[in-house]
Image 1: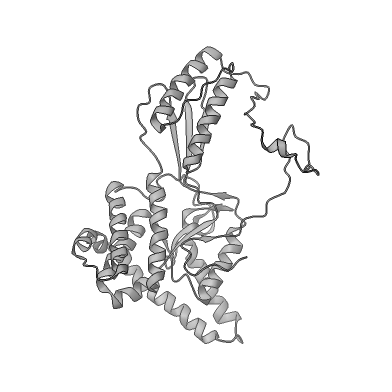
Image 2: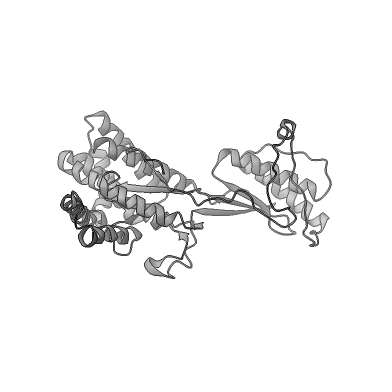
Length: 361
């Protein structure tokens, strides 16, 4: 695996090995041994209609309902209308396919389908986490509080918001996934690494990560720092370029908080089957507590060991619980009432926060 940059805001896990060839019903097993002709790549291929032996929905009702829903979809999302001379059901599939292509160009990932014979369009929107870790270092904030109290307290309010409202997990919380990973590294240092060079130094760093993490945890959990968020924004007087970046970023977080006062990273995640095994997670399912969390540092020996363990563990997972929004559009829909705007802005701001912290640490 490639070495990660110290100032990389988010970290990419090694992805599970993909099979070179797959087999599905109706396809021959194996891959073509000959390269495709250049002309093949220049052709335009349209979606095929396959009923799978099932009876198609009635034409009149489905097509009429779909066209009404499709008109609303184009109006609501500003899509270019697709005109088709094909008969049913190809006309429905072509319009749906073209709308999906237009939406995918804008991001995030979207999937369109027709719900039933009513012609209702179902738009499934995903906040694509992929194999990315959004880890926020805590010890840089502790150091900042000692040398730049104003900026430190401002970011402490941001941290409090992320923990108390957004639901970002904390590595010193015994119920968190990362708590067990840090404990495993500590056990390995004290009980199994007896003759290693710099062992005592690494043990001291681990103890500092735990002790400072526990102290910061008491601040971050306190409701006072969240309540003081607005006042700290208005009273902070930046002195340097870094201070101005800090103020701008904190203001962006506060704006997100005021626009979405009840939103969290779990607002669009189905957690129905969360508590099923150790640490409250399903086997081979990646939850927000895995990929969105506070850590001690994002550099140094302990971090490298932690990341290696996480990479080996999480790369075996087969499913990721990521924010997902499902919108049903029919002939009566006049506005969109739900979206993933909060999650999209949140992850972008968290990446900026990590970069900001690493610039001063």
